[in-house]
Image (cartoon, rainbow, N blue to C red; front, side):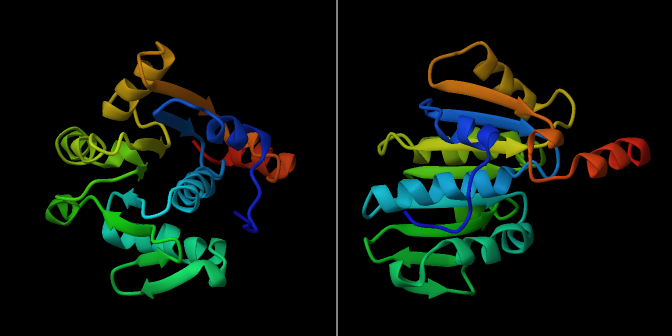
Length: 196
């Protein structure tokens, strides 16, 4: 997999985690989406005919946050076909990558998945994971990565605690924005003074 994005050390920690379900709670601009898309692409390239999804709270967010970035990451020669309307890419090895919104639950039902990213998971209804996505990983023994910024003690926090307790298949990480070495220190210091 030869892509133009590189992982910084903290991102690489998460990327290298062997647990089946990985939870990454991190500050804004840490690089969560880049990390998750690289993880998704690694699976899509390594497992021919795999099905990999990126799920955001809404379809529009999936398009805005990840579609352009995903297209930039995938080498043109690796793309068999692309559907701009459905936000789908099929690789030459038969793997399918699709961007989805958790706001349209009917569009999430029915297929087996090998890998799924759940972005800003605290804004996605808990049952979307428990009742819809999790069963889709059963027959494939698929993996999932949950990313987002902390938003109180909700279902994202509960999953993160599972990883902290090292429950079977779960591992969790927590990072600050400052753990991204590409953001200038002075910018972080200014933001800390200006933002709540």
